[in-house]
Image 1 (spheres, rainbow, N blue to C red):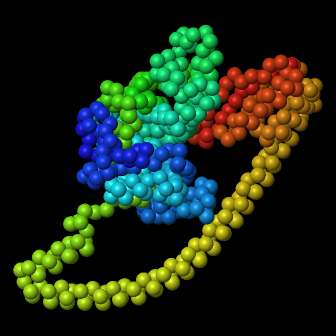
Image 2 (cartoon, rainbow, N blue to C red; image 1 turned 45 degrees about the vertical axis):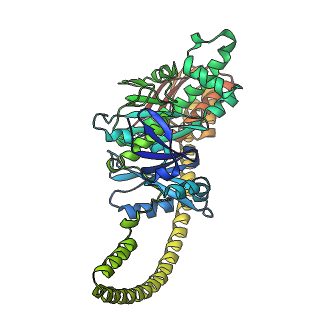
Image 3 (cartoon, rainbow, N blue to C red; image 1 turned 90 degrees about the vertical axis):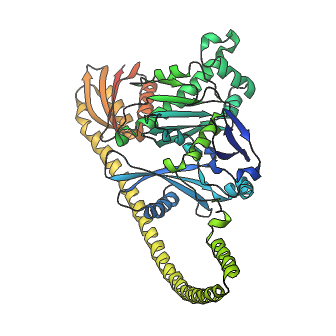
Length: 490
């Protein structure tokens, strides 16, 4: 497969010739469609909801305000921000992901390359590298997880119905090798040949493969949890296909880790990207394919390093060529353009007056906007304070409702439970007491307090109870509330 598009990677220019990634000169690059995929480890993301009736311009204005006020951007630093606008299948709103990168870092790393090639058709976050596959009618739009395992960093992109709706970064091969005290080349070789299969390793390497299994198990568990949180919004059931982008290699045993998470209707694990047999720089192939199909896909754009139009496509160039052409064939044309120019000068003068007026009006609106921003921040702060107070009242009331249980002769176990629940501000739906040494407890909590349930159980064990375990965990999809049944024995 030959692709007539190129990408800037590692400050060099690459394209695809048949099944080889080839570097081309900056001079030749100007003949191609060009793209820049900003490294994932330079990007900072924040997702938020907006009304569905906003225009693109309104989304970008409100989105930028949210990125600074809620997304944690430093107001003293200039950022380039791209917006991934999603339409959930549930609810009358937009899910917008703002992705920011420091403009200074972009200029420092890519401005030189941009000038040499004459700018780019698209500058987008690296998470969207795989969007080009969905421009092919033969590539069915399913719920697909792409895993990029790179040296400096790694990331995942989860696509549903052809759109990237989840992305996350995690440790690259450099960090993994350092963490487990092994050189990077050996790590890459082991992953590609032996993978995570314990039976493939020598006895002295068992600790290493077990550490690798633990790392990938924890990473994949976090990824699946994030993806699952978007199920109800976007109406998908599970991860259907998984594609590994690891220099064209597979990792034996990685598929089994996914199977351990009971993914239903799972169609399979693919070690190479679609349309390829084996390509070392398959990541670059995917990016070139996306640039090739820009007209058929929708991906965010940072609108920086924009491609310069060719001379004959520029408005000023057309005027110059028209004047030269007219001078050759008719001297009369000279007076025509002189007249047109005088009209343009008058319009320019009028526009300058209007511009000055608009600047003053804009300053007025900016002052109003700044005032509104301060009012909104004050309201948000009041809301958070009220929310904390309500949480304290609810927890206190919940604990008070269980006081009568203390008078039923099971003082010790009930007292310990009530005390520890109050410590972590957890809520109970039901308590079943079996004698003086056994108790079943139904705890309900938001996703953000799941760790507090674990801390509650740890405290109870440290108090001296021989059995503290969870036998049932369920999720209310409509509210995002978790319900846990905890058994306690002493």
